[in-house]
Image (cartoon, rainbow, N blue to C red):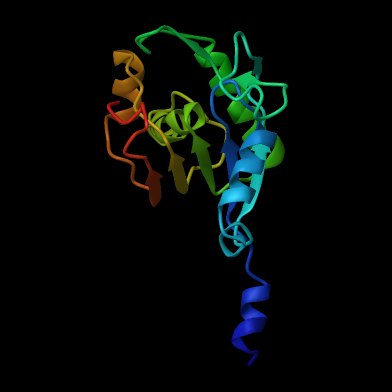
Amino acid sequence: MGSEGDCKTNQRKPRFLCLHGFRTSGAILKKQLFDKWPTQVVDKLDLVFADAPFPSQGKSEVEGIFDPPYYEWFQFNKEFTEYENFDKCLEYIEECMIKHGPFDGLLGFSQGAILSGALPGLQAKEVGLTNASKIKYLIIIGGAKFQNKSVAEKAYSSAITCPSVHFLGEKDYLKKY
């Protein structure tokens, strides 16, 4: 019988597709995580960082802090109730999950967290990610709920059933959502 250490070396790390925030990029999220999270945490995860499908359509809040290019997952109105390119976004994420997967879970920050928190419900309702592997874990950083009634009904009609961890700062502007 092998030692405990031998068993652990054969274990596969949980694989997460990482979805960045609005008008940032996969490279920016990677830098943020690897600069802020303890090595003993990130070393236990297989993290894959994707860029959103749409080039930024406006000024990024990280200009001057992080270099471009910047991307967005979809576009939305001021009240966050109307979305453009949302279906294309879901198709793109599914393509990423199929091409680079299989994935065990999603890690999302800000706009990526909003998507990550909704995708298990949309997948369960067969509205999105119907051909991708089932989402088993979530890491949500600075997320919120979709405010569009039609999307929210599909995404949140049942609670998140997979293990999830949610980080939300006291001063995060998304907290009220």
